[in-house]
Image (cartoon, rainbow over all chains, first blue to last red; front, side, top):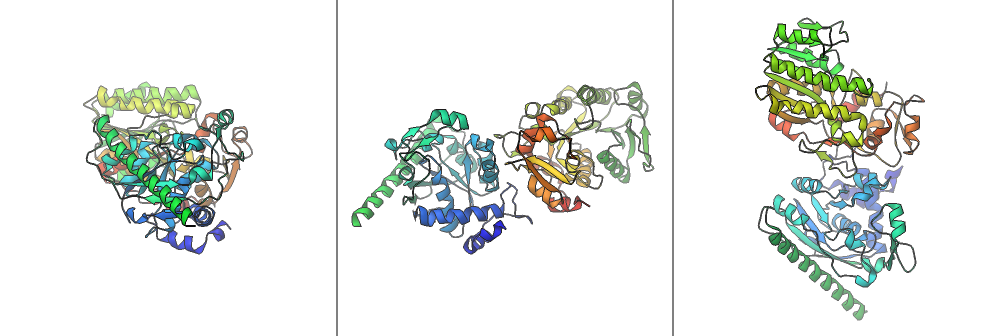
Length: 272
Length: 303
């Protein structure tokens, strides 16, 4: 019954994904072709119509083999992650599926946790990252973590501290880093306040409150900018100083992509 | 080679024994349970591995290798007895191996000792700590037995020791933990959760145990099956009816209304996966399951 909801374009692109599905349409990580079909059918509407995402530089993502996508996190809910997945599925040739690293609390939530699993979005532990990369897949990492999505509107587009674990894994697995910037998430869900008691009750790191109260994203046009792949020398056993310097370079590139994305938006608005 | 199999009357142990006989080995077996139609070439001893007559089998027959499969689970045995059999029995077997010049021992353990947890990695390697003592308290005795068996690697360096952690088995015997869970027409699960289950055809499991013995492996090895599948797929593909129930309801109905029994502490194992990485064993022995996951499930379809 649900299969009828999967549109033809999604069906075609699913068939071109480099994922080894078995007869039941499942891969060794538990990804389900049917779940992907439903997910991308819904996500396509959000990507193209609701958020009208303009994607720039998608050709920087390699057509095959491992890569780590590193970008800014924003917007109360991880809309940015969904839009990155959509851009790689709908606008990249050939279509690719990226694996995100999910906050641990989400795996305790009924329904959500099993959906994340069927979509290949596993708990953010280093073992998962290494395994995906060694299997030559795309890994999507937001090094700001929940600190990033928890940003208030007044702090929009200000990058907070980047975790450094991703860099050691990239060096250990010889993975290129493709930086990206997502612009518009902060305006789509402008978080003005964190309801801490409600967050504790729900077991989440924060609960975003917007000017219109509900943490539901508005149909705000967004931009997604991919930068050129970055490669760093090393094997992941370098000292913290070296790793932090490398992470600083990635952070600077992401910050620059954010600035370019915002400037392009301003230019468009002025032209209109 | 003369091989002693403890717990030989179990469904999987019987298949191991038959393979060993077919390969030209002399097979001895210890079990309290009978095996009435045991094939020729297998000598059975009706005793408990912890008792004096079992030691006499070692003393008199001097096996060169031992496959220790005389362990039990919460599904068949009460807690105090489990500790006596799984820990006391393993201790006796290892001591006898050491005292009577056994060259190699294979301890056949279970993958569930890794335990199911929301923040655990999906594929568990042998380096992962076993968490089942906390995530599923009724497995604590098996966790202890597994770790205790591994201690033979440093306590008895002259005794070759293989500790196997094998995924669930399914097959024509319809025996085993997972087969018991799937025994009825309706299979319960926790509403909102659909963990991956990792299993192996019982013929492949028997082959893997024999391979471990042939290769005289020293160390701890995961024996993985073909790719794992979500519980809902397992239920559907084996022709059972999926019965999702809220987590607070499930413990109250297990063991009743024709549903399988599981202890209260088992809920984590119905919510999160226990999947293992078998690459070390594969590299050491060349083991590849002959049956893929679809064939295993097809063979277990409800009839």
